[in-house]
Every structure is written in C-alpha cells, then in structure tokens.
Length: 143
Image (tube, rainbow, N blue to C red; front, side, top):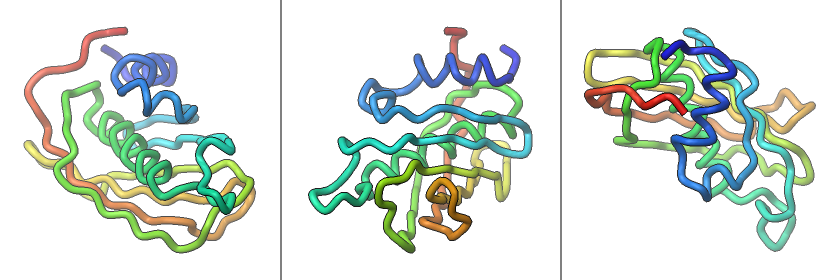
C-alpha cells in the first residue's frame, strides 16, 4: 500500500482504537521525514481546570509516533509501542495542539520516534515525547 496523505487518513480511521479516534486528531502531513497531526480543542479533553489532560497529549504523541514511523518505513507496517516517555513543559488551555514527529533512528526491528507538541499559534514547546516501537512482521490491510 502506498504511503500518502489520503491512505494515512484512512488508516487513522481503521487502525486505531475507537477511543483514540474519538479524540478527533487529524493527519496534516506524512512523509519519510515524519508526520504532523492536529488535535482540535475540545472541552471533553480537559481536566476540571480547563487544561488539556496529559492522557490526551500522550495519546497524541503515541499516534504521531506511529505515523512518523510509517512514513520512515515507507509502508503501513505492524508496529507496537515498547516504551514511551512524555515530558510536559507547559499547559494547553483553550487551544488546539500540533504534533510534529520525526524519527531519531530506524533499525530492522526497532524504530525511535520523537514528537514535539505545540499549542496552535504558539511556538513554545508544550511537551516532548520519545518512543520505542517494535517493528512486527507484516503490513496493515488497506482500509
């Protein structure tokens, strides 16, 4: 299956758990260099004090890491999270979140994405995430 923005968007609708899709993230770009995702602001993602919760941001890091990995691999491979670390640097209140993902290193069995999160319209880093994914046999079925 060819990696392009339309096939990536279709994979978002089929390859992820329903609760991940319910966050409302969208794939803005995907290439061999990485991926960019957009998470629209929603009160349903917020803690009681109006801050987008860490669970939503970590899910965005993980999802962007998957797309960045697929872009680097050039196909929709079966991969699974081995490790993830997210450092939260500042809160996001009332704004969408942009995830910019890149691959730090890609091997035969492991791939290492890195994701930076920003509040839309603000170039200050909100969170920084690193992950390790195992590359499994096989590719995903076309949606």
